[in-house]
Length: 314
Image (cartoon, rainbow, N blue to C red; front, side):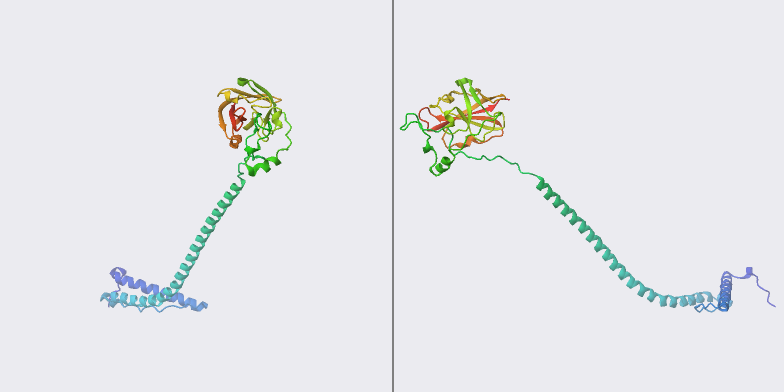
């Protein structure tokens, strides 16, 4: 009679097979219990148990091969389904990723476009707020320098010298001849002194023929003494007191003193020049406070002008 084998007598392969059979029996027990309670479970068929003799004769390797063969169909049966489900999902994921990238790029474009529009709007507003620098425009532009007249020894005596005026501008000058002279204000010049040549005479507003009979005339629209700009003063050299007869004796550094009803301003002679009667640019306004003295020249000929420029003393 064969002796009953103990676990110590079994090989590793035999113990492993016994463990498999035990687990299979427990599984069958559980399945029977589920059937009794009414729960149905789909169970895949299990491979047949391998006898102990096959294990001893090397059948374990064959059984493992059989188990692998049993697992292989199951994997092969499920693999195509997994591939079929993954492929559409991968395509959808790629599509969604493309949509997200396009949306992000669109958002970046909108932000950049908005920033450019805002920058352009700010530049337009800034340019609109910048006001151009305005320069005063004289109401009346002289066509010839003031104080022009015929010499006292000329036929007909002393008269306004219309021959100096270009023919096409004579109607304009004649239309302006009777303009009323402005009334002197408290800041306007009322008197002029030039110590180097002994000049001390009143200043009147306007430089027309009638105004220069009364004294030194200030051209209309020129600034008051002490202000920035060109104060233009004219007088005769050989008639009506010969006030500016000796302007040609002035030298750089000599003083020209202008009086208002409130204070006194001193100008320093800078230069003297002889020009044609049509050189009206010497009356142009300047950024600095200056005074320009004008008279006919030479004495008793009066076909040119002498112009003396002086700057305000600091």
